[in-house]
Image (cartoon, rainbow, N blue to C red; front, top):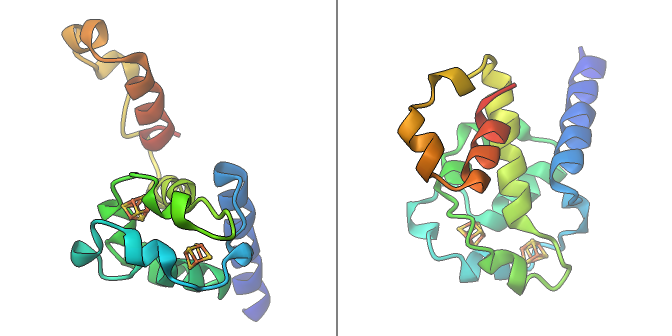
Length: 134
Ligand code: SF4
Ligand code: SF4
């Protein structure tokens, strides 16, 4: 049982590192990210606490929290970090992992309204398909 939990943790870490190109182990827990984050009032875990749980391999705590969905991808934390940890990319990677865990395709090209295809920026489509489709 212990082995499978360890494997699960290393799989998550590998996948998160692949998606975000960031290493949670680089964080030194100075909390400058949390001090600058504009939306901590709505979070149940502070940004540096998310990093700590990742370092401890406690992904369940992170996935149960609403913090990764509250994050506004504003890059403030990334610009303040003295260790060059890009927490914005990690948050994005965690959202992708959480959605993949839930399984299934949430977004199909054939279901998109034609008007939206004409008007919305292409970057929005690429980002949405990365998040919501397998
Ligand atoms: S600012 Fe960087 S080093 Fe400091 S706690 Fe946040 S992620 Fe970790
Ligand atoms: S990117 Fe997310 S976690 Fe970082 S400062 Fe902005 S809202 Fe907070």
